[in-house]
Image 1 (spheres, rainbow, N blue to C red):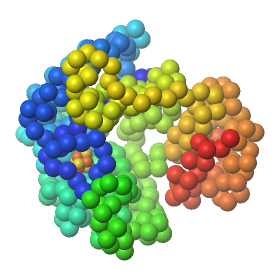
Image 2 (cartoon, rainbow, N blue to C red):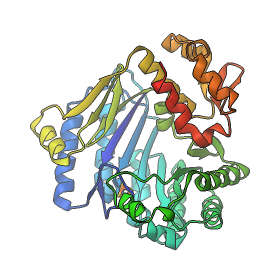
Image 3 (tube, rainbow, N blue to C red):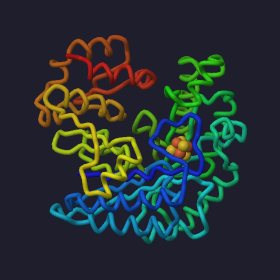
Length: 378
Ligand code: SF4
């Protein structure tokens, strides 16, 4: 299965914790970027993809007509090809403040099946702390609009461990997400990235930020409340009802192949992982001139490729299917990673159930440490 990711990097304003490749929206730059993106697309091989994902940045900083045009081009390019593959899922991330009347019906008609709404919090003070500007009522309206348009899956993103957040306020945000009866919820612990305004804030006032123990308390609340409301956890940060898991992301965690278009976008094909430059100007100039996009590339082979695949699969609640893994990578996880598997099994962070190895409930709280150990293990 092949996934296609398209990065749309413009935002109405920049959030102080954000480390993504993003720029404040300017009409001329956004238009020039689109031309560069189309030039890059035209140079891509016409292969069949199963999923499309428009991420950002803020994809709906572009108007609905532009999104329609982009989707038509992407579907024309990846909606058939050698594999004659159907695009089964097309997702778009949206900022609730920028949703216009009728946008979702247009997205639906253009092939969008899945909406990921950047809510982050329903608490006005936390929304402000995160540098966002929407009102909680806007979320309610946007979800209603998505339902009225008949989009197949609606997902909300929430952030925990926001300075000033409390267990009670986090519960309130989760309650409101659940009350909206959405199909999918993603919960992310706030990470403070170097070079962001948040990193400078933390340097001045470290006590404003959560330590691991307090952050774990909030994560536990999310797991408990979402599961009790019928959202099955299928990955460290992701919960879905029924069959509303994000197929595009499941492909990443299955170490599947993907093509990334746009500034800073990553691709993984034929064992080669590459990441485009995060310089907007360098990206646009190269794409418009028809030159290869400046990128960093790394070939993942043998043990390194298997380690990456293990790290990704362990993020999912399903874990690693040992038989499948051996067939695909020629690696016997239990034997070849004996020390690391035993270490985490003995400390109750990993478990073996039938033909799988997976994180325990406790292991999910320190997932980065456990999963990362499979990369560094030799
Ligand atoms: S809207 Fe998203 S991509 Fe844009 S600055 Fe905020 S967090 Fe970053």
